[in-house]
Image (cartoon, rainbow, N blue to C red; front, side, top):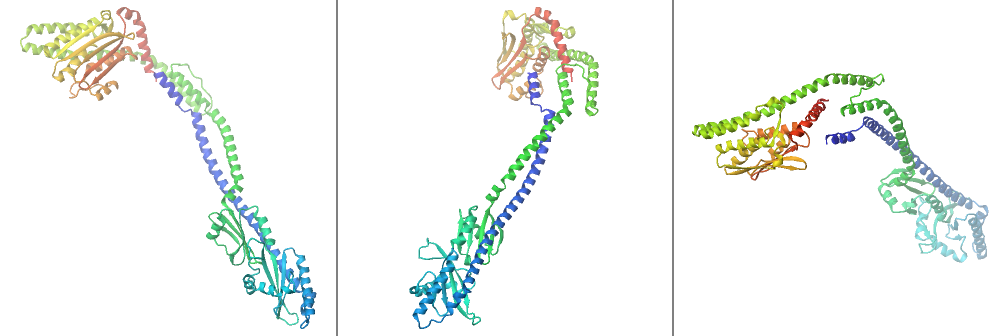
Length: 614
């Protein structure tokens, strides 16, 4: 059992090299993790800022493109107004002549159609004169009143009165909101002959999709894009799950720039020429996806770095501690009994000193080993003699106390019988140092019967004794004085405290190739805590703590000393029901003892040697 425990302990024991490698690995891993996190956070910040900057630049390109388109519309409208032919036709006096008026209308309309055809984004144009007359590129003379009425509609009329708006709000040709949206652009024409005098206003109907196509193309790469017109009116919106509107409510952008919101970054660019604003939301998820390669790079860098460090470190550490590992193995072999000399490992450092000190220690141990073994043998013999002698004074005291009691009572015949029993009892037990530590069961039982005879005089009618032993077992050997102390213990500590008549039963049997001696009583029993004291190898005190169970502890210690593992004493007891003590002893006779005497002596010497080893 001890060997198995040592083996399990060695298996659980952590190796020095593994501990050093684990500590180094932990330190390196923590350092690498810290540096990796710092590097990752830094480069993720760089990538995020670069990505936001790139998206901002791309949005500026779109806004510049829209600004260029707005500027182109402005220049185109101005080129229409300064057209000489158109100026000439508008200056022509056609009052009072319907034919000339119609002819001029047709020519002006054709001129407007000519210019409209130069730009595909122009759906139509209207020229409103100061006198209220109108010219339309998509209308005939019969539609003059219709054109005037169209210009008086709420959306265009409000736009015509608001000089701060470059373009009108979107409107539709019909009431169907699903049709093609239009916006209107106006520019005033002044009389070249009279400075500052308003002559006419040119209205260009522009297809809104001309601008929105650019925004849609830009929004193909994003989920959140919005184009605001006059008074924050939404001209175009691409908002996948309403996140853009939440961010716009959280952060209302008034100027161009980059705004940090809960959902990400709101990038805004102004189209000054049109008075519009383009906004895009760059979500945190989008930035995380775009910076994922940084995480992958640092994870790969961390794993490769730690792996290479561990490979080279483990080899280096293994080479450094190999002498210590070898020394540890040699120490374990020495602890198991292999005392071969060790060779010095010349490392030139503390390890070499450790080898030298251990070798010197082994030499000193070898010199003193035989002396310690001899001393231990003598010590064991003295301890056994002292242990055996503990019984005699205790027993003699009880017998003499009974003799005094009977002599005082005048029972001389009883005194003689008791003294004869005492003489028989002391005949063998007084020969402590003669080397004979065992006796046959027959004599041991006779000794017990003598003790019972004595106790019957002292405690009449208080107990009955039953002794059973198989005849073939009476010649078997047992240690001297092992049954009588147990019987004494059963009477004094088990039966007498009950103040009622009890029974002590001694049974000797053979079981599983061993000799078993059971001493059972029906007395008061032993509390559980004192039974635990017994199994821990301690002495058991009685309840009043004035008398100790010297006999039980003495017998237990002698059996352990004589026979070692596999033999000993077992105790079963319950308070109020009695106690049963079982001795487990080797089954041998006097002939076996003579043949194996030398072998047992050598085994005891070997046990003593093993106990003296460090």
